[in-house]
Length: 101
Image 1 (cartoon, rainbow, N blue to C red):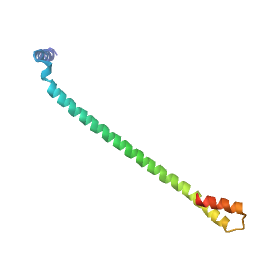
Image 2: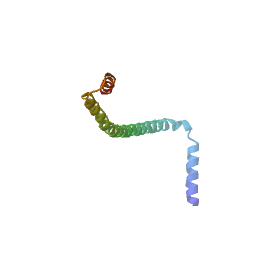
Image 3: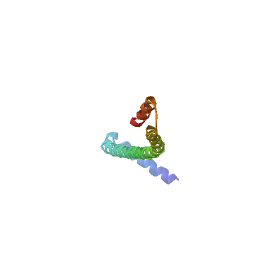
Image 4: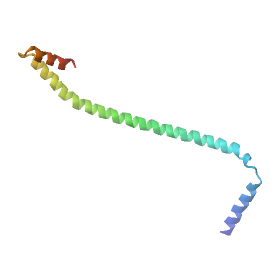
């Protein structure tokens, strides 16, 4: 344990005489690379999140549109059958309104 402490203290002493500005070009370059890497990772995560959200929305819309289409076609077919029967002008107007919407 004492040998480790001696080596550690020697390293600390050997760095004391070197000005801190000597490391700054390497430090800034490494920091820039790490920042760029972090930004690219975050952009990839954001793209994946957006893709997952788009897929979830598409699945939801497709299932809802199917669930809505079936009853709506039933209503439209009923209006078509209603128009083929004897109805007054108000009822005919309502049937036409439903079919055009």
